[in-house]
Figure (cartoon, each protein chain N blue to C red):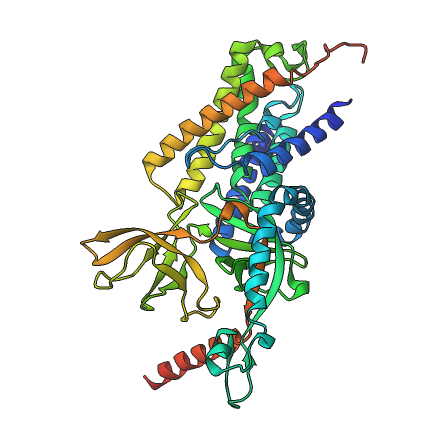
Length: 177
Length: 289
């Protein structure tokens, strides 16, 4: 499967799961909303140009927004993590995109340590921005803080679960292709 | 000039990030103010068709519960059929949502009910919306009330596309619904705190009113949008606010928002006339000044 087809399928699945399963499970607590769809942005190939990253983040957020009827909310958060993503990757594993032996960020490609830090930082950024925008017209500062921490925690649990349950069979990059 | 181009080329990614972010925030904030968004009408045609497919599957999980409820409503409606009565007296007519105008023997229909089905619904956010499978082509307009199959209040239509409509649920922090107590017709406002989807808040009832737990809260007769006398919920908790002299009432919602499926969209056929009169009065009084 080419990267293009793979990522289109992924986007469809992530949005579907987020809109029809995670947003609909009876909430554990009013602070805890499970978010997973932004993993799409985290899983994009290393070689994605930064502009394309931004555009894809925008698309991913907007698509979910139209399902949850909050246009702009998830879009803003997704664009933010799509913009920050390349910096985090460079920080954590300082090499050129072409030098990676795997195509996309995964525990296998980066190692569990750096990968979970990568996921944690982006998850935290995403939730902070998202909750901040919600908090602007509703709620107290305390609930804002608790909500950021709680949603980040539940998202990290989900991400680790997904990584263990669905290990991506990533081919080595070869120069024959 | 050349320097500007160099600057733009150098920071192109950053600039496009800022532009996209600004665009996202713009649609977010304009949407909250007007309950509308760029392309929401077009988008809800797409999300609506996906939602309708998923909902087909989802229906099977609620069949038993929904059957029971529909059966109950049918039962109560059958009892209202005029053939059950030897004589239809005036008090019985008042219940059928009619107003008698010029001719005292003729009933004028005031509320028109349309059946619809919920295709998307959420309870987990601070601003929850439902999407129903009826839109402008079926005559749905903004500001129509939405009731569930038990006749309990669900929300208000806030946006319409050709085949689908968005309903602002009672579980929405901006929702304000006029409501009154069944026992003494004192009226207040139903709001939501954004916390527990089972409970609503009733505000604006002063502390000299006598009430107790379990009292019914109905939709108010003082409303252009909502048909009067339909159940909103029952008082679950009574707290008093000494400073303001008003009760803080917690109301257990009559609707289980997790499982809303079949709904009625209720149109007030005289709404335009009422609003025109209201507007005309206001203009008249201002001219007098």
